[in-house]
Image (cartoon, rainbow, N blue to C red):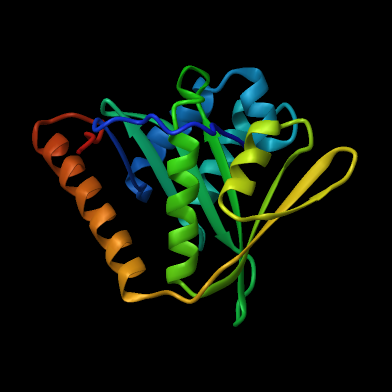
Length: 199
């Protein structure tokens, strides 16, 4: 499930980077800050905090990858990619969540762009995205990035067909992660528990 933004006005204080297992607490706190509607959109219904704890532990220790959108040094959005096949052709699923006060600022757009790049660079052939049919924002965002959509009464399925990676796509992901990592290391060296953003 996903709930995200479609405009793109993020500033230089926003960075997209991978979240690591030692940052599970940041991931959990993000989910607890979601308003009830955004949480229901993300998980397909109301969920308890105990479910969140189990989900975060699984996401951070499983085979998937988790990426965060940091705005002004705080985690405000999360994108996830989970690999659902164990042999080629690889397939994967994506999911997103953005905190209410940070929706419609381009965080979801930036997260989806990074997840698509990550999938492409790992030779994923197809990336799936599911959302409620009523979630017009994520549908428009998926269409913007080239997904083919299938609708039913309750749920919409988006399918991204991935091109082969190129040296340029690999370099773009590498430098994006390097920028995020440098900001995180600076913040850690300053003695803070929260990774910093970087321009």
